[in-house]
Image (cartoon, rainbow, N blue to C red; front, side):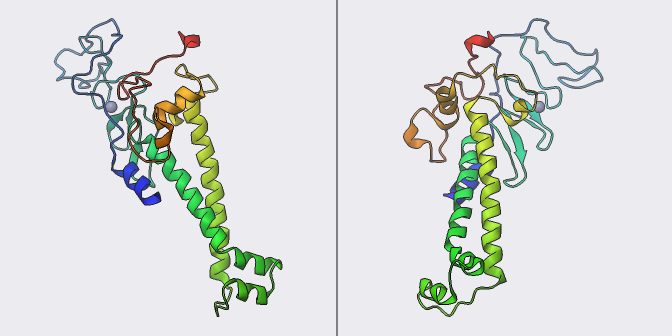
Length: 237
Ligand SMILES: [Zn+2]
């Protein structure tokens, strides 16, 4: 499952604006472009509004739905941009956030399981287990406890603990309907916060049976229009 979530996160595009995307709430002002400039983003004065009032990215010139941000690493805009993850070599956004969170969670579980499998090494060194108990626990194996075993326990526990903290952080982000980059903007509450249940359904899907599977979320229930629209909470309107 760790490998499956990893591949899903690494190989799934975070999502970009559809080719003919138009804002449901166009910004008045029309086109702003320097005379003689060739298309969006060319020239010293960078346009940010299309003729139909739809916002465009200053850098890559694509349309920008709400919560869509430009990723300077890939040079593309990503829907509900979260961050660029060097471990999976991909931008984390609307379409691969769920498998990313599951990847972190399953990797933490695998690290703790690895530590559990090496627990006799730890018990032996800490004095909780005698050498005879250690050998009988391993079925009379001639395996000798060594530095490698101890290192495996320490690294696994450290790795599992770090990833658990990272997972808790992302579960908090998901349950409050924000993103890593939005959460860095200050202590303000997210205007898209619809309550923990609806927020988690936007990330993990409307069917709880599929929450632990790295499948693309079914967003028909929460109506996010595949990442191009997010309903605002009543308090923010
Ligand atoms: Zn862009």
